Image (cartoon, rainbow, N blue to C red; front, side):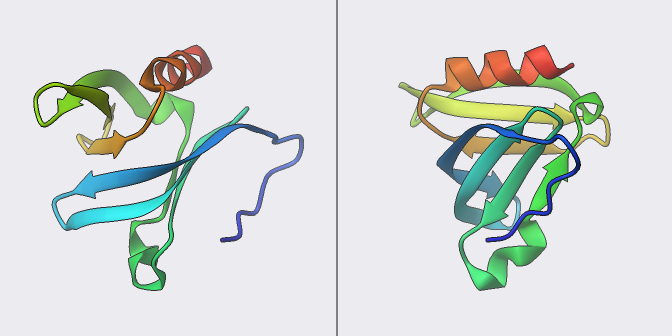
Length: 102
């Protein structure tokens, strides 16, 4: 996995995650830097699901529970109307970091 960082861009937090979309679920790494958010899939066939988000593209951060009672879900709603769902630990700190970027 290779990410080309911009000048003065540093990693703030990174974690393994499960990204859910209409096309399926993809294991990968969610990375937040001081400038943007990245998702990189571990599967070589999942590269089309790799993406980056600028803070201004996110309009809402929503919590959700996996299997109705396991509090490990975080959903990002973008200005384009996309809903990006992630299953990860410590969703509170991720939410704080993402909302602080806006």
